[in-house]
Image (cartoon, rainbow, N blue to C red; front, side):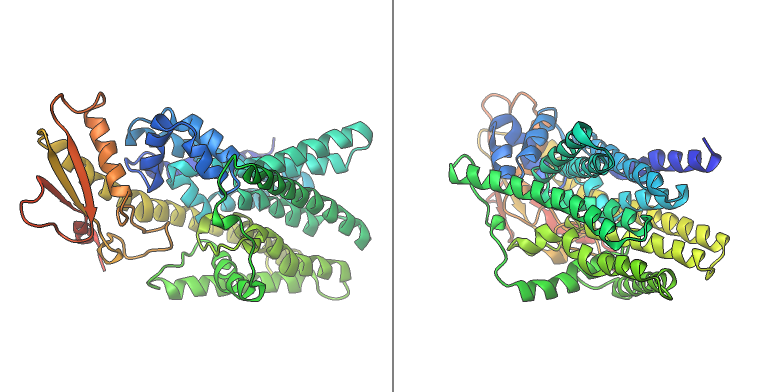
Length: 495
């Protein structure tokens, strides 16, 4: 094994855990992290019904299994660790597929690592109950690999491989639909470097892959439709189809496409980093444009067609689930496929500029190295300072109050919920980066229950009990034994 291959392999296997270590092992929970463990123990089947209502029964099955081992907030670190390990497997699998197709070690490793460090991955690594979304990625990349092997075979081997790949796609879609579309990433990567002068051969190859992927997702949707019709699971509103395609397309360009083009630069509600965000998006767009010009110049008609497919068609496929759904989700966790496609286009653009003689070897490798270094730094800081650390502050306030609580026969607890103005971070994006868990009427209550279960694993002492009331305003004086004011979070914010 060459030294470059060994270095790339070590980075792929070790860098993700090094980047996310601080986040994984910090003591905190995030929104549903507090309620779902209790429901998994006390209300068997509820987790499955909740996830299946959105067409994700496999998500519910595997999550229920792991939540049964969660009894305290500290236990959530092991779910986050599972998520990071699965993300690492995704990066490694992509590296293997791309190397086999003709990408160099450093280019394939850059794509694999960059996807593991995307904002979508940061959310997955930081949100314990989101670990099954990474499982969907593993299944989808595995499905693509199986289909690719099958297309190279004949007879029974071909049928077996394509059947296996289709099952992987089906399971990926039943785990987390949008992440099944990560298969677009290796599809684009292989299409761009695929040899052969005949356009129809490339078209047939791409059609075979996409038909298998989309047919598998459609089969999963039909299966869930039958289950909904039989009243086995309730159907969530997000399962409805979009009825305003033109406004959805504008939303797609302004939100998902823009967020994906910026790659590792985060958008936020208050535009505190707007100049950096839009600068990053413009720089990435410029790099892709230069790559397209350098690799599809002259009379290279076939390469121009490949670029058009990757720029105009595959982005729609990469976000097809969200485009079809009536819900207009802006969370980064839905952008794995689209952002991953942008990563492939950026790395191929740098490769093309080097092949065209526009940049030398040192610049080529330096650009890829710089990309990963910046991504690693940003992923470490974003996941910790915008999710783990602020969520840890919320948990600490509630946990410490529960630990100090003097129980009596009728202890009354009141939790004052914060507003977004009371957050401890400057930046906020959707319900992910910088968001609050306790600005709701149910999460603070679940947090307090979790803290009390940690203090009294066998239940409160005999003769004692407590009630928890949640509200946005301070209660009447002396109406409650303990008042927990979550608005104090703003004292940590540095504007």
